[in-house]
Structures are given as C-alpha cells and as structure tokens.
Length: 183
Image (cartoon, rainbow, N blue to C red; front, side, top):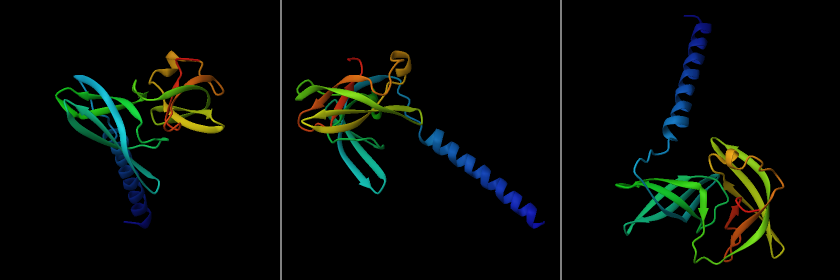
C-alpha cells in the first residue's frame, strides 16, 4: 500500500471519527431529559465552582420535603440565590430541567423596579439570550437573560436600545430579571 493511500485512509477515518464524536456530544450527550408527567417548583442557585474557564453550577430544589440537587455547566452572569422555575418528573423528581427563561423572585424578597435597556442579543446553540444594562446608585450593571423559546413570535420587535423595566434584588443588585412584558 502506498503512502498516499495510507494517508487518505487515515484522513477518512479521522473525519468519520470526528463526525461520530461531534454527533454524540452535540445530540446524545446534551439531550435534555424528556419529562412526561410534569410538576414544577423553584430551583435556587446554591453553589458555583469555577475552575479556569469552566463553571459548574449547583441548583437545589425541594419536592415533598426531599432536597434534590442538579448540577450543570453553564456560563451566564450567575448570582448565588438566582431562582428559576424547574420542571421535574412527578414520580422521579431527580429527572428535572431548569427553565432558564423563567427567572423569578419570591414574593417575600426585597426588590425594586428600575429602568433598563437591551444592549445585545446572543445565540448559543439553540438558546437565545439578551444582554441588558441598568443603573442603581450611579453603578452600571450588566446581566444576561435567556429568552423564551418562542420569543420571536411573542416579541417580534425586540431590539437593541429598547427600554424595559428590570426587577432587582436590593441585597445584591447584580441579581435581576428583565421584565420584557413591561415597558
């Protein structure tokens, strides 16, 4: 067998291996759990580990007085105490999915509402996010929020520079939620 044929076979096998690997990583490994009999509760960011460029986030949620933890790798401007709606399988609560497009504050949390502006849009995979800024006591804050999956149907005219209300946690103004239903 000539050197050229060996090289062609090597390149072909490398390409095939790469395709299989990326299909596995991109489709199978990142596949979110299918939740059929849905229940929901609140997930709270309890801890984050940052090792170099990687972030591991640990969210806690309670179901029937049992504490569950879900850990994920995700990069956003996270704040300990961030809360999101989480859906879980009714009879297997450990099978869960955090709805990052549904950030929330509890009714008893001390918040205030300020004016904010959309400063950027970003698409990471299938996830659409927007960056927004707001000012409190002369300090400029920048935060990201994941958009609803069908945001472009519900809000077809969202654009940079749009003004919206932002709900901010008084204890740490970096923790906020853009209220894009309210201008």
